[in-house]
Each structure stands twice: as structure tokens, then as C-alpha cells.
Amino acid sequence: MSLGEIDLKCRKLVEMVVQMFYEPKYWVAAVNLLDMGENGATEEKLAARMKMTVKDCRKLLAKLRNDGIVHSRTTKNAEAEEQPIIPLSKLHPRLHQQQKYLKPKKGETIWFYKFQTLVHVISYRWNKMQEKLRRPTQNFGERVCPNPDCANKGKKYR
Image (tube, rainbow, N blue to C red; front, side):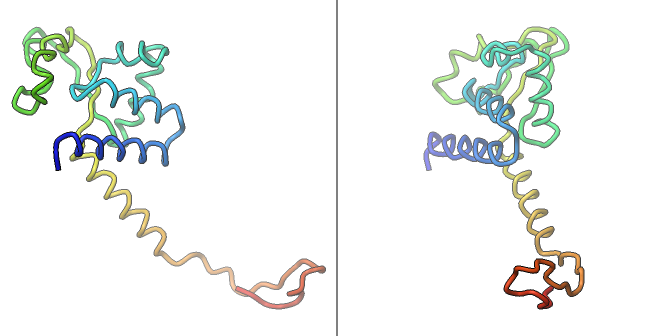
């Protein structure tokens, strides 16, 4: 598989999971973060792209972060500002030139995906959901059909 195919599959995985388990506003935030590129995005850029306040954007992303979908990092000092967001060895070759323009300012929060962690989170949740479905449901005993017009009137069922 080429790098482009892997990126496309990861993108579809994120879109599908967020669309299935979250409200549409979270899906919009997740897809916009995907569209911002491999290096992630600052809250300000993402909020401007979604045409909302930074505070509202942060709330949406915080929910996704707490669930393990996205990750964040805040730069705290001048030394952190000089470090690249993603090491050049892991950066796609065509983005090497853009790397210098994507460095965050001091105190900015950068939101990004870790796809390997995301796959583990999704498989864990999937297994938990399957365990929950395998548990026996609560047994209420036998019941009699209460509808007088029902063809099964008086018939006992579980």
C-alpha cells in the first residue's frame, strides 16, 4: 500500500467513527482538522476555518481528545517554538518546505491525529461494545399479551 492509500483509509476511518458515534458538529471539527494537513492545526486556524469562536472550537476538540480521537500539544516557551511540530523524518517529502511556516507561536495549542493510537481506541471500544451485547439481558419472566384485539391474546411469551 502506498502512503496515499494509507492516508485515505485513515481519513475514512476517522470520518466514519466520528459520524457514527458523535453529533454532526463533532464530525465537522474532525473533518476540518483532517483537511488542515498532517501537521495538525492551531485552535485559531481551525476556529477561523469553521467560522466559530476559539472557545467553541476548543470545546468540540476537547470532547474528541477525552475520547482518544484527537491529541493536543501546547507550546510553552521559546525552545518549544523552535522544535518542528513533526520531525522531518516522519513528514511527507512534499511538506518539508511548508514545515517552517507551520511552527506554532508561544502558548498555542496544536491539535493533531495519532492514527495508531486511534486504531487502538476504536478496537478497544468495539470489543467493549461486543462484550456488552453478549451479556444476557434482564429476564422479566413470562408475560401475557395485554392487547385485547391481539391475535395472541392470553398467550404467554418471554
